[in-house]
Image (cartoon, rainbow, N blue to C red; front, side, top):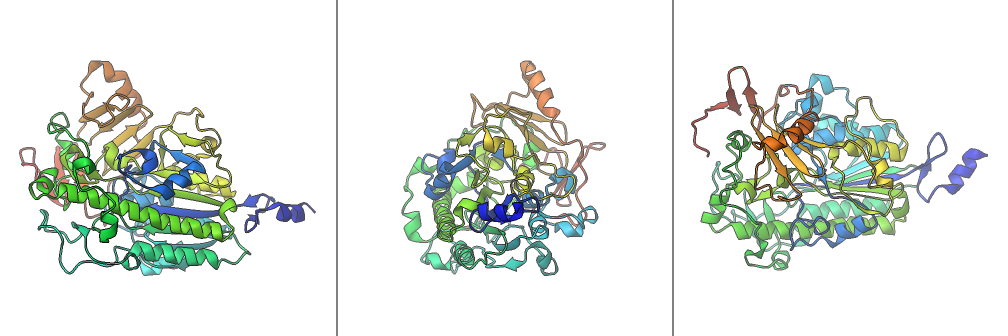
Length: 489
């Protein structure tokens, strides 16, 4: 009798778990390289994201959310395995986590839902990359692969340093929305939502490529962004004078150009405009998926999670790209809405992408694997002012960590050099307070949150992997030693 009553009380489409509780569906939306230039996060006054903003209004916006790594593969591996990069040893664009001996049997987030009886499906970029032999184990259904989509016959900007990488391009050229990989991902996800059978709950993941470079955008979208210097972020010319040399080591020889190059080549405004236009375009695709969810009748019984894998610099700290431990590279949008989430607006407690795995396990009543290193956000979803000793940790290569609480950002590099910023009075992180005697207690407190387990880079690591030997002081970037006197590239 109890089981029958539980089924009758479940929202349409939701399924009861073994203990009779309702099992919500899950829609995970991930955006690539999206920093806090999002309307509801107020990271840029011209950022327009009406669909993300509307989702935030019907759920919870985490205004102080941070990634575990400022690079695609380690960030996504962390989110989907529930382990920190300092635990996995995955710091670069490879390896695939199944190639690491200690992770071969690790159950990923979609696998946990599949084991619990959910129908799992994916479209676009959720993992950084998945070998074909492993795809059946990650999701039951694979949809549109996504990606950049249509591209111009030749690059739109002048040759860039670092080998003129083909991804280093941005601007408008004549093509249609329907030719964009993100449009096609949204179309597939929307169609999938309309065809779902009602006998199982679903876990659907949709991953969008933009505003990742190349920031190619149809002209009508670029026209929505002002063509003047109002698009540029505020910077200081001497911003790096008080940062340690090791901050350059993390961002050593990359294809992303420095601020000087985009200025000298009249590309700074073009890059910022293109990034804002691509963000607006992706928001429209998010809106299409959310509208399909509503039309499917599953909006009220589906937990929606929207996030980015990491941020992106557009001139701040005199660089472009990610691969840093500063706010612009680590702060990401994180929005949750649906059953179990109060419509309470915003939460400023520091949270991590690592927290998504245990949160979804708790909301869905699914038992996750042992050793999840994040903390469930369920208490904050019910009461955003809930107290707790929360500090968000970001790691970029072994020994380099940032700790972010509600007021401060503390960075400690592998060679022991430090940065500390008071974001209450210095939100752009222009003044490094690490050398101030009065900040000793703050540094010690935040230092105490840094990972105690910090393994070496996993075998097969490559692409943007930095290694430091404290015994010799030797720093190696992708196999090449960086010497103290080397000029910054």
